[in-house]
Image (cartoon, rainbow, N blue to C red; front, side):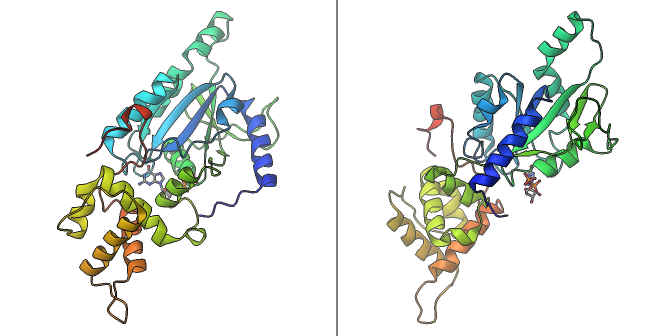
Length: 293
Ligand code: GDP
């Protein structure tokens, strides 16, 4: 995955989004449950206007359930309809239809009062690259691949997938960029692997991750690498020291016998991304910031 956004790209994505949003009743926004805020597009709220909003906390299978529930509550207080989804194995996907219907209840009621019955609600999926949009759409649509084709008033070429008698889904998701000008956001996106590894120094990234883990998931780190002791770390230097210990534990040594910290860094990042350090959430709702293990 490569995040290659440049102004032309962004302007086009935004234009398409504005066009498509006009056509739908509800926006289904995917965020990564491990970084629900950092994986959210900064402009979507203003683009969405007053459309109904659903947030899917996708990849919840990789995140820490304690915080995923807190995030769900957080977004609900902001007026979103929220549910947890594992698009890869389909867990939670069935419930999305109910959540979409709930989010559109007011609209369905308005239609009914105006004598419009059984008009399906229209939905579109949006999210940043790699958040799981295609995987979710495939799982959500399942066998209901009957496309309804072009309709009057619908921009030519757009396809609607009829999910059931109540819901139609735009077949292509809206792709939007993350808040990548914020360095902390960039770091979290890099940790989960949403930014090309070539543009980021893996050893530095691993040190940042270790620093975070020592504060919030100390035991996971300690147990995984058989570290005898582990302090709550305060800076990247001490994190690099832990990386050294990990290299020694793993017998990753350079020719001269020095610990190979770059190799250890790769282990740590790879272990994190493959959930071998356990279920980890990298950011918390403000109210939980102070919670530490
Ligand atoms: P898109 O760029 O937003 O369309 O993202 P993709 O659908 O291509 O998904 C990106 C990666 O995330 C793929 O490797 C998917 O298999 C994986 N993925 C998507 N949803 C989930 C999920 O809920 N859980 C897990 N573990 N992996 C997922």
